[in-house]
Amino acid sequence: RALSPPCVRAPRTIRPSMAASALCVPARPFEFRPCIDLHGGRVKQIVGSSLRDAPSGTEAGAEASSVVTNFETDRSPAEFADLYAKRGLRGGHVIMLGPGNESAALAALAAFRGGLQVGGGITADNCRRFLDAGASHVIVTSYVFSEGRLDTSRLEALVEAAGGPDRVVIDLSCRRKPSAASPPGPEETDYFVVTDRWQRFTDLRISRATLEGLKPYCAELLVHGVDVEGKQSGVEESLVESLGEWSPLPVTYAGGCRSLDDINTVHALGRGRVNVSIGSAMDTFGGPLSLDDVIDRVRALNKADESAAGETAAE
Image 1 (cartoon, one colour):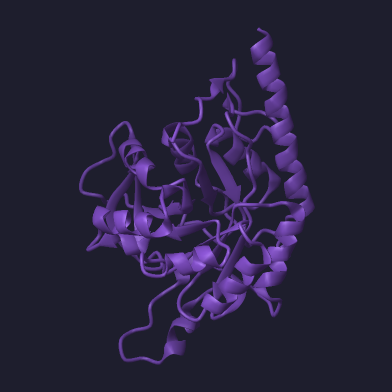
Image 2: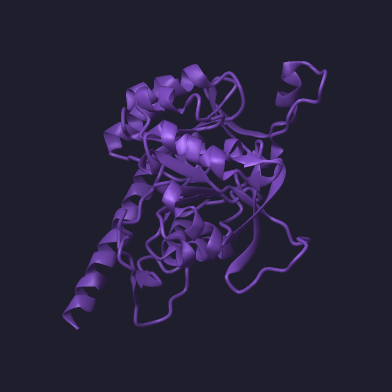
């Protein structure tokens, strides 16, 4: 698969908070990617880092008592999927947070066939079921890790079962690990991928080499900034900047976004490679950000990019 052409650097340095500027003229449109998070079969927004496995020997409900919930509704996931379909918001993700969510996920996929990705417990054995049910892509994390290491044999098996890398998204949700054995090099970060509902660190560091090495296996990457996810505390700017500089594939970043200025930041630092997903801050989930305002802001940023590209071509 051919890579998108590199972006063209803008002639001046900008602040990430500037509304209609970017560090480069993107090679592809900036996108807002919506989400539908499922927990216990219901649409919820939770603080991701509060997820815990129930201790061995305890009742199934014990896990739920530790979860910090920002939003919960009786509305069906299909209603949210239908809303996104009507707004033309393709590429959003349905995430199954733990067991008991498959029926709800399938209902969302049926409501917006080809418009949503699905993740959470995806394996080579079950991925085809979700793709056949209408998912555009399957999102995978924990299945392709074994004892904290990336297991390429599992990854290859999943890609084959899915029908090729164009139907696969790899989730590199990560947390900072300042106490790592070795400090990050010039093309590395101190973020490491976490698995098993974001509870366990792997040895996979977010770096240029990691991102480039995964290119043959997937169409896109999904990255939650786990330390800020669900907290509306601002985006992980250094992480977004690294993704924008190094990723050879489109990336969707999620975590901490709370304002239109945060959308500007992701757009600017992402260099045309990083899309944005927003959960708890959206008015659809009880937050302060209007869906209409988010769509309008993304549209305005893309219009500014088109103007900048035209000026660059005319020089």
